[in-house]
Length: 83
Image (cartoon, rainbow, N blue to C red; front, side, top):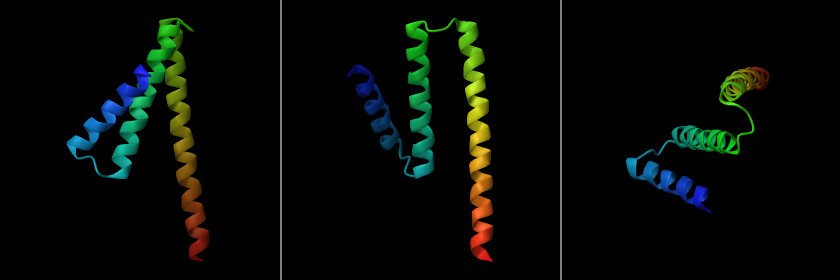
């Protein structure tokens, strides 16, 4: 309950600051959720700090690769629809 209140508080701050664009809102929401996920994993001591850093970098790299593949897929599907 406490964590959800923190997320809701951060969302209200975003609205107050005037982030209207859905992409901006989405990126901020993902950033908030990632940080909360990282804090939770660190608090539970599932891994050591060094392992956590390495694993988080791996996850970031994989997320970037997924985004690239999704954009390539969208571009290919758009090209097919145009012709």
